[in-house]
Structures are given as structure tokens and as C-alpha cells.
Image (cartoon, rainbow, N blue to C red; front, top):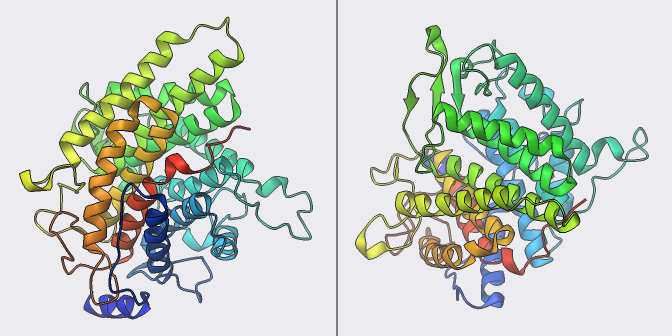
Length: 420
């Protein structure tokens, strides 16, 4: 880990002070540009799978999350510098079926890994990001359009849900290959099912297709019935079907990205139903719309009480309670609250009644994050945003989290999330 910290510190841009005025768009964009440079410095240009510099290959999903952040950055700032690298990385990872199941990840890629790359395609779709370049065998580009890629992945998850429904009356397993490495074949987790819910709801909102909305409803109901989503809108990590358990007990750990996945799905379902009402005024969806708006608000309330304000003098600053207080966050976990920041911001774009609460939480968190991005004399980001400076921890997850929370302040200024 020490070798990695030194190497990544050398890669980071030369920045001694990062300033941020959370109410000034120019200041926010300048900070985002600096943080994007810091994140991109982790990109491994020699990688043939679009990977960032990481300790082990099983953090491939985190590279997908980083590319999604750079798509957001491009949409929010109109800085086109990263488009060629984004295109290259996403093209390299499409796989033969154009669904982000590349041969390079065979044997260990899980549902949650795949969906974090699919988020990149969804984000590109929603912000009208330039399409992937055509090649001689795909002159129309239809098979690799952002919508086609997202739809292909959706069909993967539908098939796997059916295959996994022999236990627990549904739900995706963590792993989709029973012979894959790791222990995820018997674990039905929130990050996978929340990812499928979010994918379905985002496709429903974008396309207006009821098939996707029906699947979003189905995944939501299953998640609530099993208990992954509690009545008070806490989201627990997962449940097991091992040895006949049939999802009868829960792993009650709470991670910010699990709640965030369901939050953004709920916000998209709200927007989907609002759009139906607008397109067909005689179609009364007020009850359904009110449900999803209420769910989004409840998630924000629970997020605020669970993932913010670790100490009385750090009110409104985001943190990861499962690992940050003890300083034990691993490479994955350092990035989780970046997902929460980004999806909170986009949810507030889709559900306007969220904006005041979300903006306040993002501003306090971004201010703390910028103070934490002051390490090693080159602006490296730390893990803890509530200590008033750099905490000595450096890595891709920290850079990604810092960028995501600052970008969140720009989501309302960005081009609106588009429809098909």
C-alpha cells in the first residue's frame, strides 16, 4: 500500500491549494477541473481494459465508476478533454454482446461490477454524450449505441433474476456465475438489486416504456418484502440463500452507495410518472407519483441521519460510518460516498422538492472534501472530509469521492437529463 501511495502521489497534478466557493459556479467548475485532473492522473494509459491504476484487477468496477464521473464532468463543464479516453475505455470493455461483459473479466465479474460500467452508458445516454465511434463492422453504430448497451445489460439482469428465483422468490445474486471466484453466489445484495432497480427506472424515465417501469416496481417490491429496504428507508447490505436460508436473515451493515442506488431509482420513477401524466393528462398517476416522491424524501432523511454529521462540529458532512471512524475503509469503500453525492444531486434535478435539503448537504460536504484534498503537497484527496484537512490516506477512491461531491454542486446547472 505504501508503494501505491507513493506512485499515485507522483501521478497526481501539481496543486498546492484547492479553493472552493460553494455558491459560485465559476469556483465550483475550477475546483472540479482540478479534481478531474487528479482523478485522471490515476488512469493507466498502458491498460488494454481501460483501467485506472489500482492494487488488484478485481477493482475493475471502480474504473467504471471513475469513467462515469468523467462523463458527468464533461457534461457539467463542457470540457471535452477526456472524451477520447472515455470512448477508448468503454469500447474496450463492451464485450462481444455489447453489455459490459468483456472476456478480460471472465471468472470473477459480478452483477454489481457490471452495473457500475452500465451507469456510464446510462449517464452518456442521458446527457447526450458523443456516441462511440463506428468501425467497419458496425457502420450504423446501432449495436453500440448507449441505449443498446444499457438495454442489453437490462436483458442480462432479467435472465439472471429468473435463474435466481428458485430461492427467495426473486432477487439477483451478487455473482452471476456459480463457478466464479469469491463467495457471492449465495448472497443477494443491495448493490446488485439496487443497481438493477436503478437501471430499470432510468430506462423507464428515458424511454417511457412501461416494461422497464414494471421491472422497477417488481425489484422495489421484492427488496422491501425481503427487508433490504426497511420501513424507515434504511438499506441493508444483503441476505443469503445458502443452506436453505431463503433470505430469512439480513446483513444489517449500511453503506452509502446501497441507499444511493435505490434513491436515484426512486427519483427516476417519480420523473417517469410525472412524464406520463404530462403526456397523457387523462392518465391520473398522482398516487404513484406521490409514493415515489415520498420515497425519495425518506431516503434523503435516512441518508442525512446515517451518512452525515459524524461529530457535532462536523454537521452536514458526509462520511462512511461502517469504516471511516476506525480508519479501516478499503479501496472500494473509500469511493462509496461519491456515489451517494452524485446520485443525491441528480435525484434533486428530477425531484425539485429535494433541492433545498440536498443542496445544503452537498455544500457542507464539498467544503469538507476540498479541505481534505490538500495532501502530499500536490492536492491529493483524503478519506475523511470532517477533519479540517488531509488525513494521510490517498487513492483512486478518495479522488473519485472528492470529484463526485464537487460535481454534485453543478448538477442543477448542467443540461437537463434528457429523454428518448
